[in-house]
Length: 277
Image 1 (cartoon, one colour):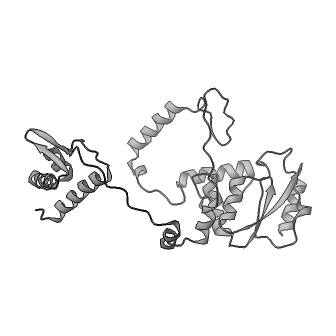
Image 2 (image 1 turned 180 degrees about the horizontal axis):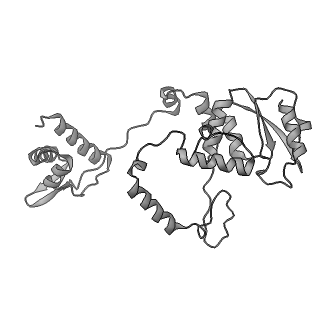
Image 3 (image 1 turned 45 degrees about the horizontal axis):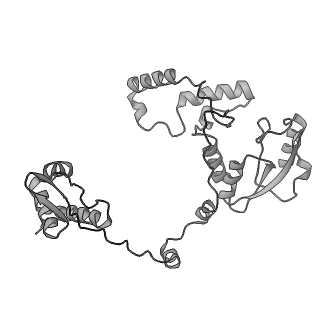
């Protein structure tokens, strides 16, 4: 008979796998020596387990050969699953945020066909990406700077933030400090952080119509009421904005998505800022 808890655990695991059909009739089991080495137990422990399974008719053993599952053994029928009603009663309730996520359709992966021209937005061309150079510099960085394998600064590498600060001042005229810059993994994470920090459930958020769908979904997930406003050749039509108070407006003055004819012009920017004030 089995004695130790470790033996019981191994025995129950093998037997349940045979019962479920995960190990099929006639299939060979690992040798006692290899299984003992894999599980970190003595060989005599595995021998005892195999002897117990053989005595119960689960496996067949023979001198000089590996044990195998008995040929006439059939897996047990699966246990009846509880009805959907009973199962729903046992499922822990999820938050309002979780229910909103549950109701959203996940985006489908793009179809990649070499015979088609890829117009997928937000992706780089395979032919244009310097794969070899990227791998070479990546390997060099890992070898020379082992600390990169561990957690870094929570807001991003200080030197990278300083470079962004200089770029934003030069290219956008935006005055800020490196400490005010947060490095994230992409547009979606940035939108999620902004939505969680700036928006409470029930707040109104003004968005362009049409707009970037994933941005709209992000604000909807935190419970925002989306106030859609049409766009024209100058951008967001501020005259059509409702008089109700809105927490924020999400607009893309120079990178409208989906693309429309024209971009925001300075008068439209000024009007929007005046509306916000």
